[in-house]
Length: 160
Image 1 (cartoon, rainbow, N blue to C red):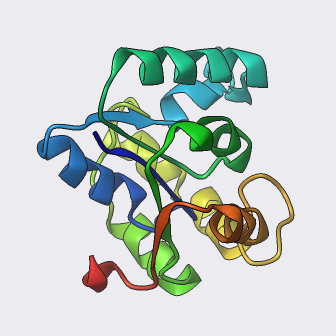
Image 2 (cartoon, rainbow, N blue to C red):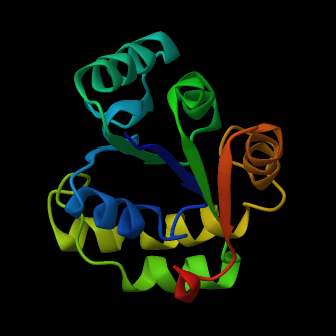
């Protein structure tokens, strides 16, 4: 049984890699789908509510891949994992990936709506090295360095 957590900056390749594991038979959870209350404007759900949804996913699946940038939620799930993968290809690559990403219908009503959010997303990605929040590089590096199990860091999308 594989229980994998993939984390990193927006645009780092988390979803792309998670889909490969999903195609190999692992259940897939994108933390974006449970971290936000979308009505009417996006607001983070209470942490306990998101944690409950993660618990349900973990309890209902023997093998899984969970991906996201939320170190607060990852910290909750990490004790159930058998390995972690830190996607860290650099800010420039993350921006390039974000600009080239296909439409994500589970996040946006249309490709146009997704593209209208691109400028905000690029600015968010640029702040990754200097932020100190749950989505920051320092939070992700701390997760990675403190994990005692199998762990991998990808500094390039080509190395996957």
